Length: 116
Image (cartoon, rainbow, N blue to C red; front, side, top):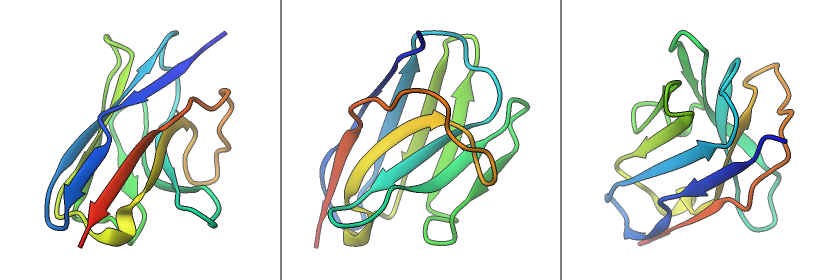
């Protein structure tokens, strides 16, 4: 059973940066994405990357976030720059992307809090 472990979250001031990591216990196959869920809101996709490295971002994070993957290390990354208070959420990784539903059991996520 594939397991996902997210890390790298924390408390940061607005304008700051964080880099999230997601370790996959099995092999990363197919598109992968980073999702986030703020209190009282639905979980939403913020960035996705294909096996070959093609990327796509939600408009709200475009130009500020960068998704990458290391297939050899079975690790997914999300580099977040120029953070805003509205980026505060629990961040999760999973398979999938726009139009492709996630298929792996969700991990516990990693919390990001951006103070103003």
